[in-house]
Each structure stands twice: as C-alpha cells, then as structure tokens.
Image (cartoon, rainbow over all chains, first blue to last red; front, side, top):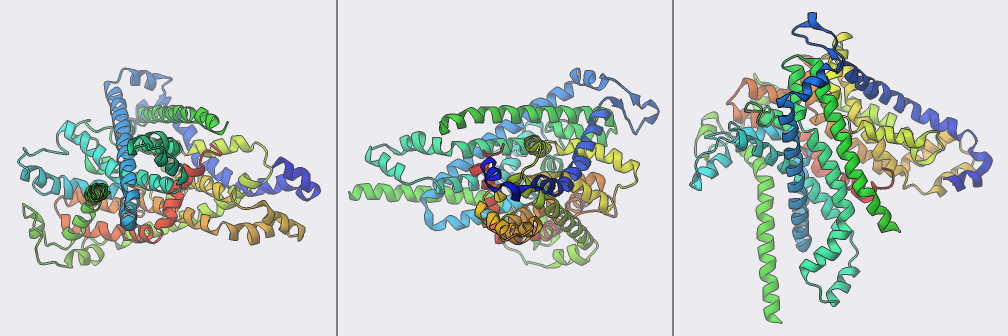
Length: 304
Length: 283
C-alpha cells in the first residue's frame, strides 16, 4: 500500500476523500443501527424499566448488576451456556473432522456428502428446532422415541425432563452445524499438499502418525477458525432451543441468551434483561479475545 | 501383497459403511419430514410410525391456500429479505473496496469496529430495538424490520467483501488510472466486474440469513410483518398436533433456501472457508 502511493504520486491525490465517500454511508448506517441501540442497551441496564410496573421506572444505578451477582438463575444460565458451548463445539469439530477424513478416502461419492451437508446449514434454526421437537423427539410420535423403545429401552421424555432436554438441545445444535465444520475441513484437506504425505509414506510413518504429525498441524488454522466461529454462534444460539424446549422444562435448557430474552419479553423486566444481555456481550468478547489470543502467537511462530 | 490388498478393501468397506450411516443421520430428519408431509392426520398419528400409506397432497394445498395459508408470510419474507440484501450490497461493496484498497484514515480502528459489531449478541439488540421502535411507533413495520436486519447483514457483508477485494491484482486499477478513468469509473467498470463472484457469495449469505432470521422477527414483527419463520413457530404453538400440515408448510417455507443451498453449494462452501483459509490476514 505504502509503496504504491509513493510510486503513483499525483494520481492518488483525492484518494482519501474518495475512500471517505465510499465508506461513510456504510459506517454511518452501522453507527445508527448497531452502536446507538447498543449504547441504549447499556443505558437501560442501569435503569429500572418494567413494562408491567411502569410507575417504578427510573435510574437504578448498578442495582441490576448487584441483583445479577446474587441471582442463582443467572449463575445457572451461565453454567448451561458453558456446557452448551463447549460440548456442542467439541462435538462439531470432532465429528466434522472425523467425517471429513473418512470422506477424503472415498473420492467417488463425495458430491453426495457435500449436498447432504449443505441442507442443515441452509435451514432456519427455528424450523430445525420444530422438526426435532415433533418428528424426532415427541413422545409416542417421534422417530427417536420410537427407536429407543424398539431397542428395548425405557421411554425417555426427551424435551420434558431436565437432563434429556439439555442433551436434546445440544444434539439439535450439533446436528445442524457439524456439516459446517465438515465442509470447511473437507475443503482444507483437499488443499493440503500431497508431497508431504509421500515423504511420510517413504519414511514408513503409519496412518496415526501421519494424522498426528502432518495432517493435524496443517489443519490447525482451519480448526482454530472453526472453533472461533462456532463458539460465537453457540453463545448466541436462540431459535432452535426456543422452538424445541423454550429453555425448559423450568430452566433446564435456559442458556444466558434465553434468560435475557425471557426476562425482557416474558417478565417485561427490561432493565434487568438489558443487564443480562450486557453480561452476555462481555462474555462473548472475553471468549473471542481469548480464542484470538491463543491463535495469534502460533501464527507468528509459523511464519517466522 | 494380496493379503495387504484384501485388508485395504475391507478397511474401505468399513469406512464407507460408517460414512453412510453418518450420512443417514443427517439426511433422515429431512426425508422423514417429506414423508410425513404427505400423510393424512390419522396416518401421522399411527404409532409405530408407518412407512406405507396412501400419500395425499392435501397438506400442501392447506399450507398454501387453506386455513393455514402461509402465502402472506412468504411474501413478507421475500420483501424483507430482498430489501435487506439490496441495501446491504449497495452499502457494503463500496465500503469494502475502500477498506481493501484505498488510503483511509483510522482504517485499523474502523476495521476493528466492523468486526466487533459482529460480536454483539442478537438479544442485546432486540431489547433496545423493542424499546426504541416502540417509542417511535415502528414495531411491526417493514422499515423497522429491514433496519434491524442491517445490523447483522452489513458488518458480515463488509467483512466478506473485503477478502474478495484484496484478491484483485493491483495492475487492473493502475491500467485504468493510466487510461485517465475517474475513480468512479474504475470502481464501476474494473473493480465490480472483478468481484462479481464475491458479490454473488455475499448476496447468497445475506439472503439466507435474512430469510431464516427468527429472534427479531418474532419480537419486533406482528400481524403486518410476519415472516415464515414466525408463522412456523405460531403454527406449532397454536395447532399442537397438526404435524403433517406443519411439515408441509415448513418444507414450502424452506424450499427457497434449500434450492439456493443446492444450486449455490460451491459458492456457499467458498464463503464458509474464506474465513478458514485467509481469515487470519485482517483479524
């Protein structure tokens, strides 16, 4: 960039003005549509805003945050968010990588896998949640309910009992998004250089050694970016859980995202709901900050 | 040698069996939805589930033209998604060009800003938007909904387009400058044709995300603006057990995205992997 400006000299006068004209509309719209509501959110997190009891509305100071600290339901939701995110991301990466490695070995049928994998990704999460709630998990109707009983196990109330409900929403999320990891890994595997494998084969490295010492390090950037992207989506997951369990039974599958939503739109306590949403924002930024930090030094190492 | 080969064949068979089983896990819920959508209500409730039955088209008729018609919702989704996509592209493409190629003050901080806006949890936007739109009487309006949809489409589109802009060879612009083309001419005649593929990928992603959006739609919409995702959800909460009709309606609602998904499968994978392959550069 620098060299180019020097080289071209006069031609590039007015470049900055042109660049500003091009970016200003987009950035202005972003400021108005994202930053302003976000500032409003932070402001309302310091207010009492309760549409059910508007006569109490007013400045609340840090009261919402103090309440949060002593709110067992908040800590419960936070714990569930952690379980939900870590387990679903781990499953997506593990299954996606395994499947990609398998499919790489069968070159003839790859297109079928690619087509099938694209389908869950393009479906609306709310529809995925509804399909699973009815067609797969509903008692005395769903396919999985039927299979469980057919195999001789006791009937499980998948969405109506606490632990099965949490497992169900994790499975649903994993079902929908593992294909994403699979497709990214498949593309990365296809772009790996073949000659390193040849060299390894001559060195008589076995399959496990080849995977551990060659494939995995080469895939590392793809794995890290998939973890980052999927963690963000997991932290903000909403529609599929909302459609399948509504966060229930009770609060058994209520991750922080749903708690903030319900506090605002069911209990109409917008001040406290805002504070919960701010907490989720802070957690998101912290998690992404940590993940990016973990990633950066390795890159330098690799390029040095 | 033959022993080796036999072991290799056996390994391949096992591999294909496992892969096929996993394939079934992913495709089954969708196939089952298609089957159920052709069942009558009595066939649907048969337990254990029946595989052989008299297929009927009644559910699709009802979903389109009957009491449970989702035609209005389809129209709403189309209006909101197309408007969002057009606006996003118009705003994002020039901005991305400036980011990728031009001298821009505070480029780093603006770039970080667009990235950071993607980290805002949707629930952190739906709460203030509800309060704000309520105050200005814009709940349940198309304008309000499209504005809200820009919050997730625009930062993403800028981010994606920058990666495509960075791939254009510098020589193209330089040649244009030597021909005394103005900056606008260069952008319109040289740059945009070069990134046509990138624009297509961005259009697909923005459209898919807008079509599938649920959280904003369910809380900021209403009787006027009710996209198909919300119509689907209401269907289940109101008509608890009409699952054959739900399946038919849901399949119709998802038909546009499924068609796009299969037709543009290559572009979608490209869009997904662009972050994995070269996302490191700017982040």
